Amino acid sequence: MRPDMRHCQECQVCVEGYDHHCGVTGVCFGDANVKYFVMMLGWGGASMMFNGWAHVAFLMAVSGSKDK
Figure 1: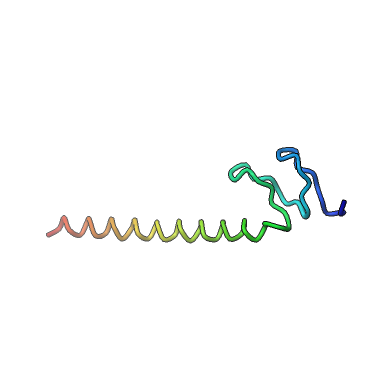
Figure 2: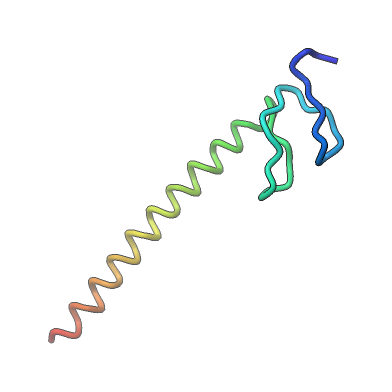
């Protein structure tokens, strides 16, 4: 067993470079998949920003059509 391996009590598996067990996705994050976790956070943040912008644009369009 490598020195940077840890046993996850939730999954009952050993993970190389163990970072944490995510309760949302239900998996452990370690060396093998931490880049996918970071990408998930990045794309989730980008999606929230786009949805916020689209919501504001929609509200501005709806409020502008009432003035006519």
